[in-house]
Image (cartoon, rainbow, N blue to C red; front, side, top):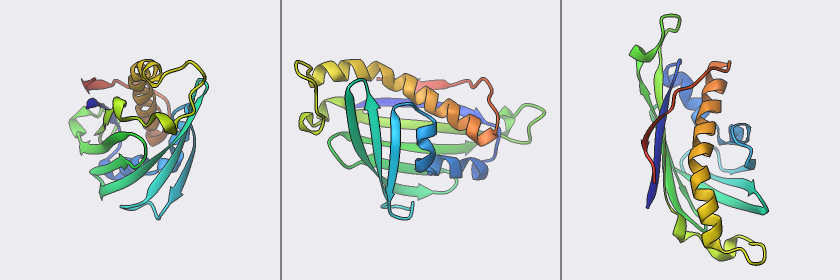
Amino acid sequence: MDRILLSTVAYRSPEEVFPYVRSFTDYPRYTEHLTDVRVHGDGGVGSVYDLRLTWWKLSYTARSEVTSITPPESLTWQLRNNLDARGEWRIEPEPDAAPPEEETASRIYFEAVYDPHSADENAISLPRFVSLDWVIGKVKPRLLSEAKGVVSRLVEDIEGRPRDVTLTIHELP
């Protein structure tokens, strides 16, 4: 299993941050490869999100299920089709990280644990002469940059303005 764990600070309380993390339908604003999100459920535990991803000549719909929610600290998810993957958004108060002009701060953690070789080759329509191993080799290095971009744009949304965001990488595959 591979694991990406990164974090950053947002200048808001966990209670203010959590609704943004929980709003999967807003995620297409954070990445160019996620084109559409459809929700099945009320957004609570057991809700399923169809995440339409496109990259290069490939398109794929990942089905993600919310497995637990502990507001405002944590939301966990697991993919339910074609790939062994799960993850968590975690928010912890970190008021000492706030600059003088800000009232408080929180540390936002993004974690994804996945087995790239568990991908179902039949679930993706690959172009002729393109192997799943080739696709994995091309996608794997892009996952970190995608995660960084999502977290940075999420902070911009939370705070209502752009700024340079420092990302801490805790673990990489």
